[in-house]
Length: 179
Image (cartoon, rainbow, N blue to C red; front, side, top):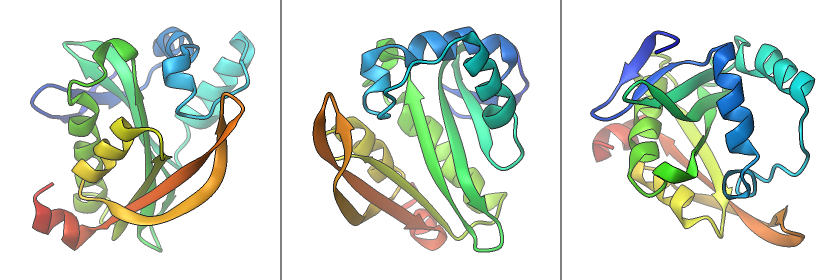
């Protein structure tokens, strides 16, 4: 398994993202079932993916982790817009379609939110999902998040405007919920 284990759950291991993971990332993000809910509309060539790895997945301003099952990468989860002084960050994630609906991302996201509160000592973690993406909204709610706002027609999917739901959880809410 490339990259050392960073966080472990019952079924998932979260590890660093390595350059050799780029092919999986590229191929999976090309799948419309993954790309569309992320509202990614522009394709990337090999050079763009390399830049993405070097500038985004390897930076120190976010926490980017590979979701691994039995040593095989199956998705990514990350904390971004990390503001240690203000005590907040946003979570993002995606999984390969063949493992959708198995609770894998819920487990991975909980591990990352717990890490944000316990190790980074953040006060608040937020997330967002398309209003039409019930699975992603479920992941965020299973991390103890509650709806804070709806940005009406804030994104487009297949040429249609859709609402973006913003959710958040405070450290004490997460701890109380045992999420």
